[in-house]
Amino acid sequence: MNTNTGILAPKRRLSALAFAGVMGIAMTASAQAGSYPERPISLVVPYTAGGATDVLARTIGVSLSKELKQPVIVENLPGAGGTIGQSKVARAAADGYTILLGNVGTLAANPSVYKNLPYDILKDFTAIASVGDTPQVLSVRANFPASNLDEFAKYAKANDATMNFGDAGIGSGAFLGGIMLNAALGINVTPVHYRGAAQANSDVMAGLIDYTVESISTAVSSIAGGKIKGLAVLGPKRASVLPDVPSTSESAFKSLDFTIWNMVMVRSGTPPEITSKLNAAINKALTDPDLKERYAQTGVVVPTAEHRSLVGAQALLVDEVAKWHKLLGDAGVKPE
Image (tube, rainbow, N blue to C red; front, side, top):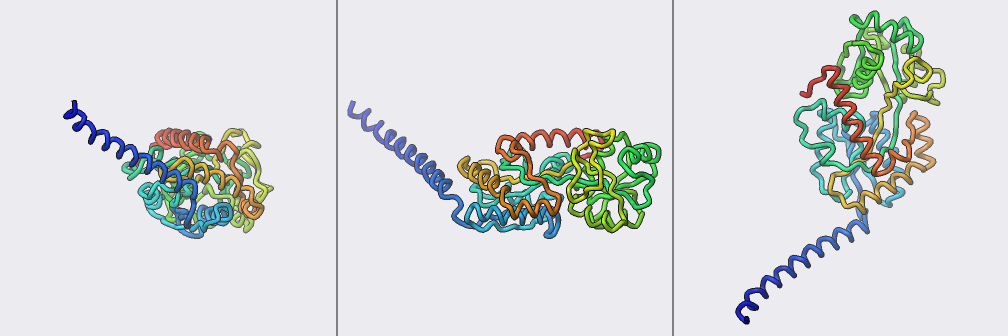
């Protein structure tokens, strides 16, 4: 009996030590989550500085810094359609100090555009909150023979073989908008890929291509100059910054809605205490009067309460990945 006790005792001690180790790790993680954040947070933007997503990130960052009492530093990591920036977040520590601002293109469309992504968007990331919705505008050359979406659809159905739309590359917002228009209107207009949205807009202004789908923020200036016509806001409501441009709800294509949503993400495995704290801080930041004024100036809309929730944001992401997989597949877009 004594011999057996001597053999079992060390095992019991090892089990006790292992249990204590696990509890220690859990208590440390809980303590870290409780005191989060204790240092600056990096907000990765997978685009160049100065673009619409970057401007949105900096607007959110300022208000979020106030709520979290720590600097939120925007880090621009463009390249490969957003893959470079998103890869960094996928490899970062799951501690909430490296967060991502992605959008419908980089998050929902990329899995159907790129064959060998170094991450799985649904497994390697956790959605925190949708933070800004930007309706898009159908902008056509000044002498395009249509004055509204219904006339545009009629003309395009008869002439799509000779038409072109401009975008900033496969997976860009303008490309996705053009693909959605093709599907919704029953047309097949060929895209022309540019290195950036500005070049596409310039060629629409010059009359070299027929149209592009652009953000509200850029549409305001391009339409005001008279070199581009805004035919429709691709959403259910007119935009306050473009009061004379009708929405799709005023056409025969009432359900057509192409709004670019933007979402904050973290690496999966981030403690729930931290994801909840980030979500609460973002929701509070979105009530900041300065942020709301900036949003109004650029045509950005605060998302619904559902899409600002942890559960709702994740559901939106899952639904959108599936939606764009079908749309892009039906359009013949093959992952590269």
